[in-house]
Length: 177
View 1 (tube, rainbow, N blue to C red):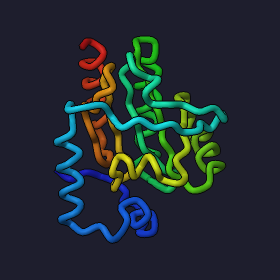
View 2: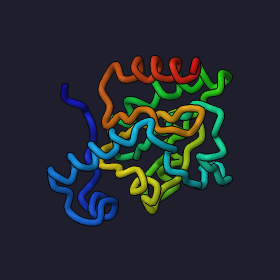
View 3: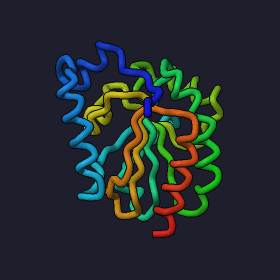
């Protein structure tokens, strides 16, 4: 199965991974991320939102959290966004939080794009790519699902039509747990 995704620009990739990303290193990153699923808490972070306040991941404990890394230059991100807005609206009253982490260098691009896309969930700004690096981000979009105890349960790299059904099913399962 081929995943539609937008690779990070070479400058960002170097910034994120500290050098050229080889196929072997990429495979190691993916394997490490998968191995960590369910084995411990998702790495904590605090980022500023487009609204100006700070939001900390650890403060979301007790809720199922979907974290979606996106950028304004990412075509698949823009296609996926309306589906994420619907998912957020559907489950937000049931203990679900969706956080959009934008990695654009200019926060104005993120805020303008979020408004145009009709995003209703919090958009966090990671212009220095600190959080993207923390999660070994190599593909846009990347979506994480974190359970109520703060454990990273699912990682989705890229976007393909139909992923929204997978997200919906995984969110429902985590909300029931």
